Length: 606
Image (cartoon, rainbow, N blue to C red; front, side, top):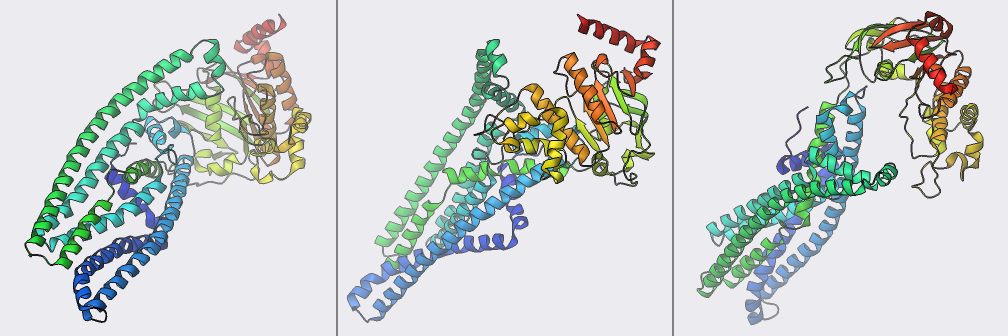
């Protein structure tokens, strides 16, 4: 995936193009109020200028004269335009705020939807995707808010039109002065937007450099690594490295800041010179009688209107910075698509009822030089328990990822009751799976949520929750918490609490059991108790195998001595099944399993 070009013009245009997709009526209202917000001040400007020119004549002719009537009319028109402008401005600002919020919500949904769309997880390990995500993840933080970009555009667009209208008014006095102002403000705005773009790219879009800098910052302020950093005295090293990277970034930014200052000085000098020249020309024309008093008033008021245009303030910065993440989100939305693999076969009801088979499966991770599997053959009989053991790197977890559809085989196939999973709907297949991985997620949610995420549609069934908790021996623990099932499992929340590693593992195991209650037919345990000692892990596995008798259960472990009660045990090595059988059979074989089991058992006995 090629990263998009982060240019302010492209980003702003992307924002503008999205607005009709958010709401056509609100976008039409925004366009209408932009025009009115620009036109009504011009009406006030012209009527005020003409009123200034009419006042001397009206004063001389007295009340009731044609000049006085004309003055009253101009005053009424100016006042009405002024009041209408205030009313329209309030509607304009409120509508822009709502439209901006809806755009931000739209982009948040697109971002989450895009990342969730692929059926596997390989895209979350792709460098280009990670670079885009680092930018897109800043959506809603600091100045990086499309809502502010819409608000900035809603403020600048009327000013832009008003300045253009004032320039046209000045062209009636002098065509060259009018053209100069007509060109000056767009040029100034685009120049400053280019500078904001450079600053924004420096601050937010240098993905590779900033990813490590942000990682170092998070290490310093996050609870999990705090113990190691202090025990090993690493805080000074972390802060020193962070300071060096920040200084390099700021040096890069400072160079652009100096360029920006020089550009601002040149721009302001040019505008001052243009303002001075225009003012002197108008005054001289008035003194020479070349321009009437009323026309002179119109031109002078038009000239003052030029300085309502934003180019250097926060409004212009909002437009540039707020638009920055939009191209990244749209690129992710366009590129992260589901694999073009329509379901052409349906899994039998209640699958698996016969067997799961790996038939000549080959697999290599994207970008990896070495294959994990080359011609793996493995059959898992439905309703039995299978233990997959092997040393680290043997391919145990990769086997689970393939079975779960997180990755697809590069060769061969995986079948369930004879149906190739590559031809089945992965969402349907996953409803039959309950998986608990070694690095299971500790959700900072309530106990109820942490358990019922295994089958969210049963979240209100408290009896089922307790049924999943009781085999794990955690009901008493949960009932002792401040709010029971509704206690948030995080000490970062008011009234929340944290659990020990073993307690968290039992909560996660209860989640896996709850998924089984929700209809899962295959239970996968990928070393979920690896942090426990060997005895505790063996007891947990034996208990779990009793609880899940009759299910198709796959247990992954690097500890050979903990899974002896499984119906069948296979030993993986080098991506192949090198031994296969029940515990007694493998011990009698005297091969790798027997050797590893004896070694680990002897260590346990010491």
